Image 1 (tube, rainbow, N blue to C red):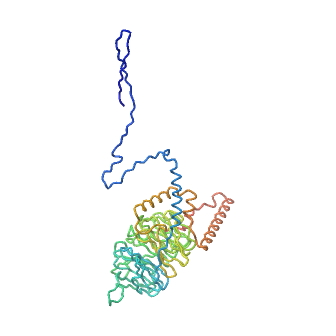
Image 2 (image 1 turned 45 degrees about the horizontal axis):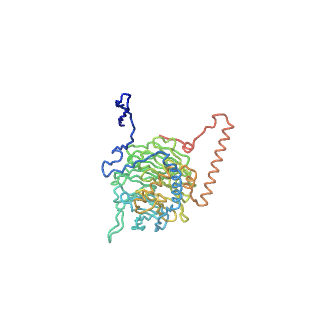
Image 3 (image 1 turned 60 degrees about the vertical axis):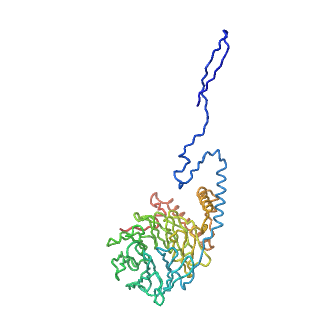
Length: 470
C-alpha cells in the first residue's frame, strides 16, 4: 500500500490560491515468494513442484484420470504373461524344494525317486545331480551360511552335503550321515545357529556336531508332517500334526507351548518373515488360515479360493503376500490380510502342485509338481522384466497409483479381477458356492424356527477351530 498526495488549487473570491491536501490508500498486488517453498537445500533433494489443488482450474481432471486408469487396467491384463520357464530333468514327481540362503540364482529340488538336483535359474539348467536317498526325498534345507545343505528321506537318514560340486576324480559323498529310528517327514534349519529340526513321529532338535537329538517333543500325536523355525524369533518353531493340530514350541523349554486343533488336518505352515507372531497354514479343507500365535482361538484371516486340498505355502520376503500350491493344479497369490487371491496361475500340463517357493528378491515364484517339472513364474504377472528407462518406470508408477485410486469403480474392478480358469475349476467353484449358500440358508431357517438364542451365530473364523490346548 502507498500514500498518494494530490494537490488541487482553486481560485477564491479574493484571488488567493488555496491548496487542498487529499490522502487516500490504494492496494497494489505484488508477487511474494518464499525461497523455502521452491529452493532445494542440496542438489540431491527432490525438486519441489508447486501445485494448485483448486478443482476449478482443472475441471476435467477426474474424468481424464479415470480414462487413464481404465486403459492402464486393460493393458495390465493384456500384458499379463506370468509363465517364464520350465526346468525339466527329474524322472519322478518333485516333492520338495529349497532356496539358497546367499545366492539368488541357485535352487535345490528333491524328487520322489531320491534324486536331488541343483539348478542355475539364470541359465535355466541343472548344474549338479546326486542320488541322495532311497525312496522319497521328504525335506531339504540350506544351512544359514550357504556352504552346505541337509536332506531327509524315506530311508530314515539325515544327510549333509557340500554345496560345491566335488572336484575331478572325487566321489559324491555326504559330509555327514545320521541314521534315525523312524522316517523323517520334514526338516528346517535355525537362522543363526548350527541347529536344525526334523519331524516324523516326534519333533527333534539336533546339533550338527551330534548324532542324537539334543531335545525331543511329543504331545500325544502319531506323526508330524511339517516343522518350521520362526525367522524373527529364532528360538520358536511350529509343526503340523496328523491329529489336525498345529503345535508351537520354544527350543529353550522342555515341553511344547500350546496347540490349536482344527476341524481338518493342516499340511504345511509358513511364518511371516516380517511379523514374528503371524503364521499361515495350508489345510485339507481347501482353505488357508493366518493365525496370531498369541491368540489361537480363532484365525486372523481365512483365505478361500482353492477347490481342493492346499499342499504348500510360502511367504514373500516382504511379508505382504504369500503363495499357495494346491492339489487342484493351480497356484494362487494372496495378500496376507485378504480372504481371496489376487492372482491364479495354471497351465494345461501342470498337475498337482506339491511344493512352492517365493524367491528372495520378491520377483519370482517357483513351483514343483507331480509331472516332474519345476516352473518359474513372475510374482507380478504384468511386470516388465529387464532394465527400465526412467520414463518407463515413471509411467508404471503413475499407472499403479491411478489403478489404486480408481480400484473400486465397477468397470475397473471387473476388468482387474477377471481371471480365466480351467473349466473344471470354474464349475467346482460354482458348486462350492451353491453348497455354502445352501448350508447358510438351512442354518438361517433353523434359527428362525428355534427358541431365541438356542442356535448361536458362529462366524466363519470360529467354525474351523475345535479347541486350543495349553
